Image 1 (cartoon, rainbow, N blue to C red):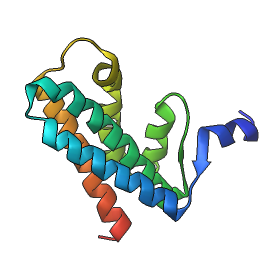
Image 2 (cartoon, rainbow, N blue to C red):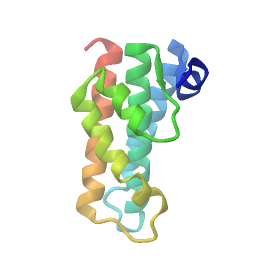
Image 3 (cartoon, rainbow, N blue to C red):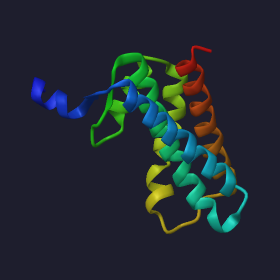
Length: 135
């Protein structure tokens, strides 16, 4: 991979970018929590949880590394987050493993899976907030 390709896969970010991704993460997480117990909106809650996790990972990586992944696949995002925190990377991996099911599948996800995804997103956002506030 040459330097030009690497530039497309990772994006340098500013503190403004980090704040914007953190705000998005919180909003997605909050909306997922509102919908998680509503059976007709469980799939939406799962999709929002995935988006919350992605945004939180972007904020964590942006804060710690000054960049986040913009690769088409999600393996690079997980690898980049692993360089910051392996536990958070595992949570992101759990969310991303369900992304296609949450966003595109016509089959309903189980309530247990949806709850797990919303919890994983909540954990990522809480850890993001702790890192961004120095707590």
